[in-house]
Length: 297
Image (cartoon, rainbow, N blue to C red; front, side):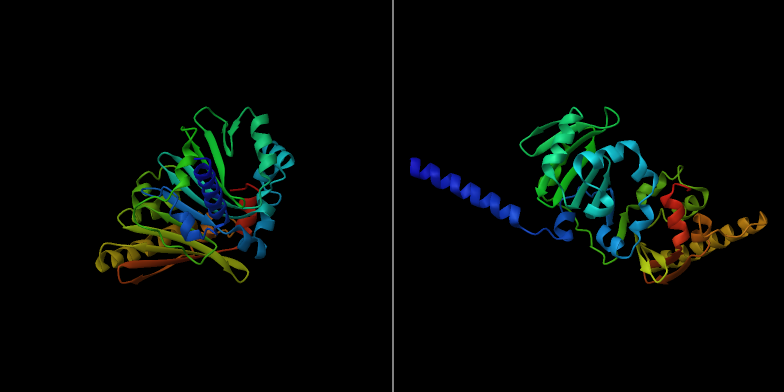
């Protein structure tokens, strides 16, 4: 009996060690996110760091917030240096994140306890800025944090297993997002110019936004899938009309599109139809990122 029990214990230890040693690809991590009806976002921080884009955010409002600086000092974790990628699901039940980077788990756990949180083995919980913002996390691997912000204090446990359903495609661009068209029905909080684009895209099947460095600027691309080729042709016409209207409205105010704000981006869009898809392109100048970094937008 003791021999059998010892054998079972050894098998469990070997299985846990094997699972911890597995390399999780972005596609594999994506299957763990609750993505049905959710906005899914991916950011390759390592690629943006190499492109010197993250340098713009070193003095951003977030980086200078006292709470964030206290977190960095206590844990040694700074997203500008230590975070390599992030997969995020903005789901109706909360926000779910799979973060790849370099974590000092001991320091992070000590920070959680110092803030009134608690840890059971490697699964930790703490209260966020409000009672409804319950934060939970655990190390999926030494270099991968599974984290959730929800009304459910155990929400991160949903990231322990893969979820059934259609699989999302992993794009090559360092930043991309899959947006369900239904989300755009509630666009009241968007800036006026963006609301017009959101309304035009409400009838699509799927919306993918992606971005990548392109020379001295960034390229923002739209890939919208429609029900039919005819719908795609009509959408392309509508998006061009919205862009032209924005240019006209700005000209009426005796102004010019400003590359440091949304007017410079939205008025520079070009669109083309490819079967049932509409491809859009906007150039994003570094001046816009600089304004975004310092909180001027």
